[in-house]
Image (cartoon, rainbow, N blue to C red; front, side):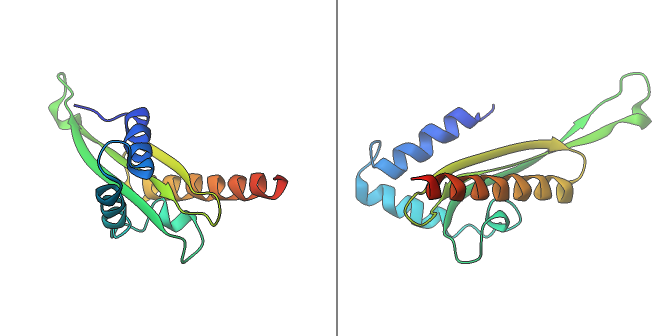
Length: 127
């Protein structure tokens, strides 16, 4: 069971364009996704007040050491994907991370979201 960036992109694109379900239900789904309470990833990388319709997921996997069970370790995954409603030019961003510390993974997602915001603003100025 896995969900790739490409799959997330297709899902959000179909919701944004209203091509999989009706436009009315697509808009409702995006409105619900914009209420997501997780604000330590994509949302923290954009200016306050910018709407982000996103879905995050987290998972902890225990990796067993068959030789030394006391050396078992946990690997954490944190993913955040969504549409950033930048004025005049909404864009999709998805960051999938893996490591041992959720706080660090949150910061990585936030930093990448901030870089994407900055780059999108630069591109919009060139138009």
